Length: 420
Image (cartoon, rainbow, N blue to C red; front, side, top):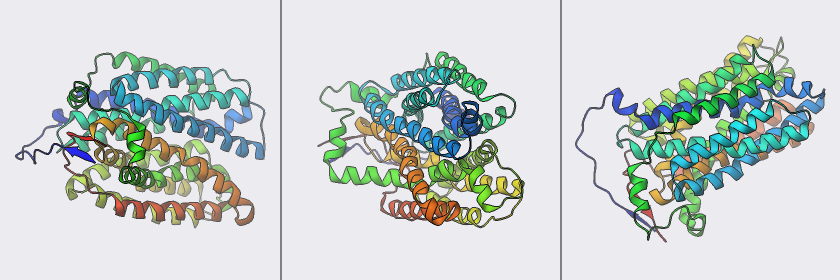
């Protein structure tokens, strides 16, 4: 059962850009920039870093799958930990704690000498990275008027995702160890910017009522309707990390199978893919505002994603430039990440909002583990491309179904609680 305090839509008013660019939005966007830089950095430097540690041939692919799975498993663990802390201790505490952990982990990543150290630090970095986006989206959603909160979360994600483009760009000029060091330093600098951030009024209101249960995972899992809502939110977002975790991360190997006419790098595939995601996030947010609907906007972007996944699978013999263009267009289709996170925040009451909004994107990222395992298991019998397309078809079918079952949340008043 949930208790909602609905006040009805306020009289229409015009909002200026300054109403959207409040401190939580600006600092959240910069934080997510560093988060995405660090999150995608392993995919960007996977090949040179593993070769630098003495690996070659199939070991680069197999060890790469293991390491990215360790990072994503860390995000699963971190998503639960930071989510509960976000509702119990506050959104700001998560923003501080998470960035401190992944900044230290990435500084140490610059010093690894073997794959065991690499794996441990990717796991710890994953735990730290898990808290950033969900806490920022929760804080922004609770701090802005309902009419423009979708624009605020769009700004956070659009600027933040540029971190992947930045990472792909600087990897062309610095070696992989320097890239990790840069990420750690950026995180430390960001900690200073967060000192003056304040909690949202909605969270303060919940904290002042000692009878309200906050961040109780049992409250989420004991209620069948909440569990279903939670799972549906997760499943809607999986295609994005299928595209990033398989089609872009393993682009060098997939391009060889497609017979692309020249060498393809993971760094450039990520760079072009995330450039598309940046634009996609802007368009998805604006489209949602224009349509007055989160669900219809996400549905359109899922359809675009399905189209370009098919194009990717049939791009045999294209040039590297054409292949990178396909990665860009694929990113454009999957650029509904901010919208997906906003929907998760709007689906649950204030006392469980951080738990859900922080853990949901991390379960989506964690879905890379079964996706890559499925991809690797199918590859010997089907081949790399058919295996990748099969995994993608399943992801997209499930996402369309999940979206059809979710409630529309555009314009929903977030001042309500979840109760047993």
